[in-house]
Length: 61
Figure 1 (cartoon, rainbow, N blue to C red):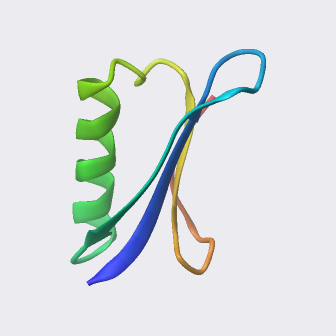
Figure 2 (figure 1 turned 90 degrees about the horizontal axis):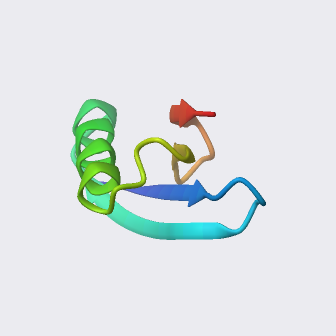
């Protein structure tokens, strides 16, 4: 298991979500991150998903 960090922002730059979660691999983390964004209705906002080393897994602007 590895740590992943999901962050979403509003247009002014305010952080709307900043959550850490564990996932087996990058693909599982990406799927979980997308599910969280849809659940919280933030999928259309600017967001990013990175691993603990800072590698960008998912990004939307």
